[in-house]
Length: 548
Image (cartoon, rainbow, N blue to C red; front, side, top):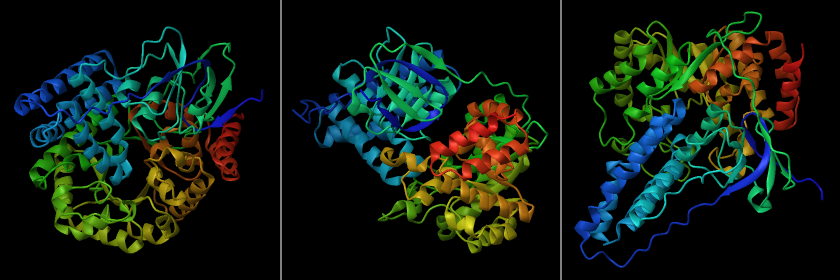
């Protein structure tokens, strides 16, 4: 029988082989009737169910560490979210619906809105589905969904995995993860990397194989169907990274290694991981779900808590990345036929100049109080005119160093003019890939198109690197591409001067750069640029990086 080889997106390096345990999706479609005899008593069951689910998740979080503990704690908070539970209580009363059905329908409203929003918000839809299923099973008195206890080392195969389930995995018995859906920026992908479990996502057709055993390469993104009696190969993971905390190549070329953060706890974790600063501070946490604009004082205090751990160090703050892809109720946004191409990021800031001005003022005040060396950048900048408008506004507010995000191809093609009016640029590779390849970054069916190793994307980055070099101004990368150690070396070879990532990736990336010189990074970049497709680009770059 011919060997069946499938290609997905490798999101966590390492190679393993072994028997498959297939995770079936819970079929949870609770009945809409009969209506409760006592709607008040039925509604009263919902919050205790949320507390019970949250309690179990927090107990699991207490036994976990780092990123896994954070995800479990976040899921616990969602299980007690008053907006979700309150909506379900209303449906019990107005339906009247049984509690389980009310929770299911309330969660579906949230999931629909998140998926329609796209971008970072769409990534959270899987989290809500997980919480929904846990709440429904609690109310129905069934066993909670999740991964069964494994009686032997196994490869887990699923349509998708909930982040909370991934966070609880034991790397000593989970050889690898393979999912048919999902993408490289999902919580599941990030957790797999932090746990050191080889993983391939967006592997189309793998569920149709119904394999008894698989050989998985999380670096190359390949999944091979194996005979049932395949020899079990415990995950051959990259060696533990040892990094001295200074971002540089082996010949001393400096590359700042920074963290992506979105909250004060994120900032504290980044410090513990040795981040040299923050390359992307997402400020949306102050706004999402708010029914009215947070006051300047509230913003000031929230930002100060994030900045304080990085006193004396560089921090890049991104202004509100809101709009159709991240609905903010108080901004009176209207439905758009294509949210990803709508009024978002800086475009919304130009509509609501007062909101932008108040945020800039709060950022400047927080920078002064915290002692961090703060720069500010705007999201979704498409033209030099937009860059100039933002730079003037930010400098008028007291910002000394101003930059913009490069997330659409037009910003690369007009980079010379943009760099004339700003001090730096930072690439959001997730969105740049999405807009360059015309592929929704959250859609598993096209996940291979948004692979950051796409030669078309790398060629755009080469153009940007050349423009930045000619202007004598820095260019950073703050998308998930920066978290791939081999791709990080390629990015340095393309002229990138700083890399920002989720904190678990800092040591592996730092160790990889410390093991190669700048000339080798440039040779790896040239090899990747010459490739025709992502897997070939990845393989060619690795071959160059392995040369001595």
